[in-house]
Image (cartoon, rainbow over all chains, first blue to last red; front, side, top):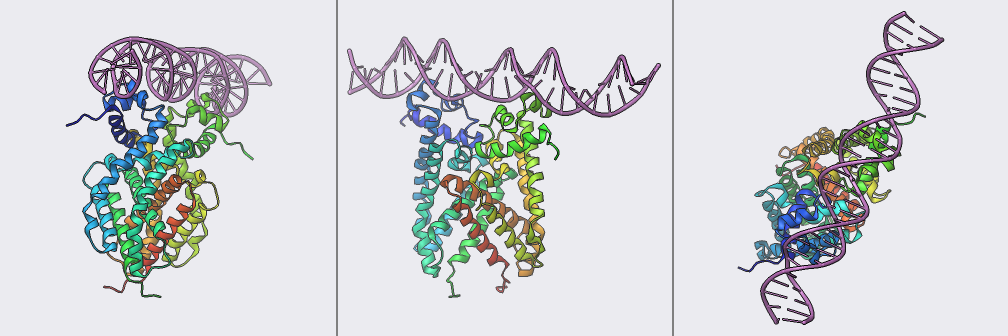
Length: 201
Length: 201
DNA sequence: GTGTATATACCGACTGGTTGGTATGTCGTC
DNA sequence: GACGACATACCAACCAGTCGGTATATACAC
C-alpha cells in the first residue's frame, strides 16, 4: 500500500473537517492535525488557506465523480429508469452513514464564501454544476421519450442538485437525516410524473 | 419616529451581514460597525457572539413571519391555489433583489454551526421548521381535496422549504439568481401534479 | 424639590489567546 | 549538490470578550 503524500492527506482531511465545521471555522492547524502533517507541509503545497479551499473543491469532484461513474445504474437501457436509479443511489448514500459524511463539501463551502471569495465560489460552482451536467444526457433522453419538449433538461438536472442540497440543509436544521431521504422520495415522485408519456398535447 | 435600540440595530445588522459573509466570518466588530453601535453595547445585550446568533435566528422569524402572514394569497378560497400562490410569492421575492438579500439567514447559519453549536442549530431549525409548519394546514386541505391520502402534508411542507434552501445554494454556486426562480417553477409543477384529483385509486 | 440609591443602557481602551502566514533548517534522492 | 518534501520556531494581526467608567431614568425618603 502506497502512502498518500501530505497534499492528498490534507485534501482528504479538508473534506471531512470542513463538512462538519464549515470552512471559516476550520483552522489550518485543524486540518494539519486531522491530516497528521505539519504546518510547513500545508504551506509547502498551498500558497494560502483560500488556495487550499479551491483545490479541495476540485479534489471533491475528483473523489466523488468516479463513485457515480462506477455506479451500477448506468447499465439500465431505459434513460428514465437510469435517472430514477441515480436518485435512489443518492438516497441510499445518505441513509447508511452519519450526517456530516453524506453532505456536500461544495454546497457547504459556497454558502460561506460566495460573496467574499470569488475563486472559492467558482470552484464550488464548477463542482456542483459539473456534476449536474453529467445527468443531462439521460434526463434529455427521458424527456424526449416522454414527449416533454417544453422542459429544459439542464434546468431539471440543476433542480435535482438543488433538491439534494436543500435536503442536506433541512436534515442539518432538523438534526434528522431521514428528512433528506424523504426529500429524495418527493424528487423521485416528481421525476416519475415527468417521465410518463405526456398525452396532453 | 422612534429610534430602535442597540439590540434591535445589532440583530437587523446581523441578518444582512451574516447572510452575505456567513456566521464565522462575521466578527463582532463587523456587526457593531454595521449597526452603528459600540462593542460595549454588543456585550451588554448579548453574553457572547453565539448567544447573539441564537437571538438573530429568533429575530429572523420575528421579521419574516409577518411578511407571510400579511401576504395577499391567503384570500383565495381554494387551499391548493393558496399553496401555489405561496410558492409564486417566494419566487417573486427572489427575482427583484440582489442575491444576498433573498437568502435565508437560518439556512446559511445552520450549515456552519449544526455540528459545533447545538444551540444555534436548534434555533435555526426552529425557524425553518416553524415556517414549514405554517404551510401544513393548506397543504393538508389541498391533498385531501385531491384524494392523496398516502402523502404526508408535513413531509411535503418540509420539501417545499428544502427546495427553496437548495435553490439558494445553487443560485450562490452558479452566481445566478435565475437558477433559484427556475427551481421554484419545478416545485410549482410538482405541486400542481399532486393537487390534481387522483383518479388512479 | 432635593438628595440618595439603584438599575439600565451604553462607551471604548485594553488583553490574552488564536490564526494565517513566514523564515529557516533538515533529510532523502536523483 | 541541487531540489523537492517536509519539519520547527516564530511573528504580527486579529478577535472575542473584559472592565472601569459615564449618562440617564426611576424610586423613595426627607
